Amino acid sequence: MDPEEIKNRIKKVKSELETQEMNDKTVSPLGVAMKMGTEFVAAVFVASFIGFYIDKWLETTPIFIIIFFIIGSVAGIFNVVRSSKMINKD
Amino acid sequence: MANPMQQFEVKTIGPKIEIGNLDISFTNSSLFMVITVSLISIFFVITTQKKSLVPSRLQLLSEMAYQFVAKMISETAGSKARPFFPFILTLFLFVLFCNMIGMIPYSFTVTSHIIVTFALAAFIFVGVTIIGFIKHGFGYLKLFIPSGVPVVLLPIIVVIEVISYLSRPISLSVRLFANMMAGHTMLKVFGGFVISLGLVGGWLPLGFSVALTGLEILVAFLQAYVFAILTCIYLNDALNLHH
Image (tube, rainbow over the protein chains, first blue to last red):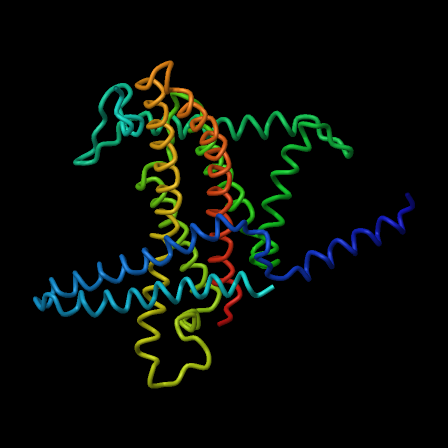
């Protein structure tokens, strides 16, 4: 193999590395399914937690926990929609 | 009959060490973490001993591990994330080896404890947030303001975005922990059925156990992969801010 060819090859690999874009095709379907379930639950959990402590702090039980539970559910759906968008992008 | 949850018990090995109120004794969990780390080190030392341009089979193994992670990073987070390659590789191999060592009978699965996975996830979360602020300054907060949202809706959207950002370490850690714990419990339960049903009815659960073991090995790999790829995705958010 002559040095010229090796140089060209190196150049090709380098340009390939730089132009590689976001690509989620490689994530397996099972992993995606598990990801979505936990993402939804985690958002609800975090939001309820925040609501619970705001309530405890302001002594307004149960106003904020209800509000944050709803916001958390919305955030959870947002998460799921976002990850499904990511899969559909390609 | 053995309790299916008994396998997750953390026992201290050797003397009890306490600093203040903190119990930092060496446990079977720590032992298996040490085993994991030394196995990974041994793996790389052995496979890269004879470095040649045309790789031997052993060298190919470590090159495959390298390439797998390198490809994952460049595909999900782009070329800017390449400086974080050592971290992602370490993380991926640590979780993978922990999961796989857990599949050996009588061993302990480190990743089946939420505190272990949460510590990893919290570290990633804090690290990614710091990287985002270093790279973009306060512009990183733009992550919480999606483009094209009417001003009226902004207060609600920002709260939702913040909550969805805060839920990342929880979903990351719970996913790994729940998968590992559920799988190992199920294996143990089916194993218990084999004994209690005896020679007559024990064959069906035995078949199930064999099938589940295969599935568990797949899950062990998949969860390590998902953990690493999500870290890459979060890193991508911090490095290439686009919303």
